Amino acid sequence: MASQYRYKAKDWQGNQKSGVLSTASENEALSQIRSRGLVPLEIRKQRYLNLFSKEYFLKFLEVIGLSQYSSRDLMIFCRQLSTMLKAGVSVLRALNVLAGQMENRSFRAKLSAAAFALEEGSDLAGAFKEQQGYFPSLLINMTAAAEAGGVLDTFMERMALHYEKQHDLEEKIRSATVYPLFITVVAIIVVLVMIIFVLPQFANIFNSMGMEMPLFSRILLAAGQTAAGYWHLFLLAFLSGLGALKWYTKTEKGRLRVDRLRLSLPLYGKIYRQNAAARFARTLGTLLGGGVTLHSALQLADNTIDNAVISSTINDLSDALNSGESLAAPMSVGNCFPPLLIEMVRVGEETGSLDQTLHSAAIFYEKEVSYIVERLGSIIEPILLLAVGLFIGLLVFSILSPMYQVFQMI
Image (cartoon, rainbow, N blue to C red; front, top):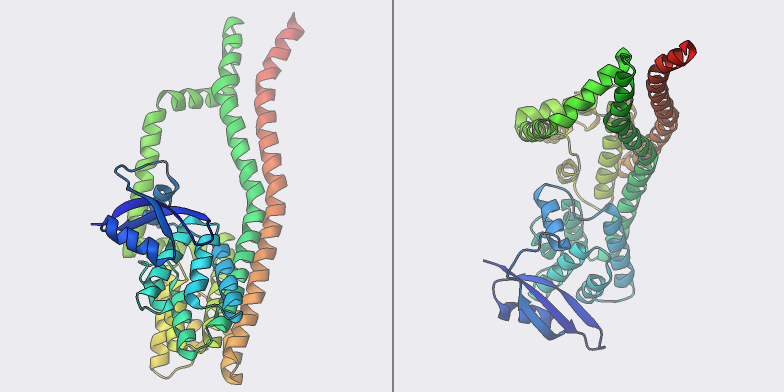
């Protein structure tokens, strides 16, 4: 069973290095440190699990299925690796250098492990594959094709462009949605403060004056008192419902229903479908441009789509290709892909330029998703502000109007 060893070492230039290795013994950890050209200064076994360490947090993300790196990390890695390879640096040396320069600690550790696998005789694609599914299958298979053709530097540049486009789209979506989310959170906090702290004070004032609070205020006050008195039951019910939903989505039937709902929602469904189309077109075009066969490219593109309905359609595309059919015809079945993408694929097949056509389609849908999200964000912002203002205004009016009537009677 592997144990965690924390070490401190120096390289031949005198720079101090530190990190954590997962090995079966201390001697194996020492061997890994020396194999990286480092002089070990201190090594000790971690005898307890630090729940607040970054390593544990990253492991927790891996357990619950969240990525430990972003498309930006992949973009930086591929671009720097391509630059170093073009400059004549060996793959092993490049990995060791990048393992000490990457910002993401988890990514650095995996690159160090991949460099050790290279020293043991593995190729780069095999070294990536040994990291227990950490690196995306697209990168692994493109690396294998590049090593077979002896054009690893060119392929890494192509992958850097791929992840750059993916990162740009993610950033545009994130920047367009962060402000509406911020307003929503602030609005919820304001409402909770009004219900839990402000309304009880006014209730005491009304009771002392022998008056009854308005209906709207009484409803909110009762809701706040119920939530404050039984918050642990509400929290338990919420966590139980969340766990049940997560379990249901892991079943084949549940995942199909949830993913079908994603595609059929009025506004979100359109954005989700076009985003999936952009990712599918970008990945498939990159693979075809890299010399991967269409059948293999479809299988790899399927891994980048997190939707069971679309994945089923892609599997149908593979079956149709095996039967001698074209790619465009079965794409129209299931309403998973936009009609324009289907037509562009048909044109690409007829002209023999499917990879270039897919790249053009990816650019179009990435811009379309960015445009829709930006417009949606600009529309949602004033609507949220107006809704919060109306709610607070109605609450204040329902409280102050009876008091104003009392003041007029005095």
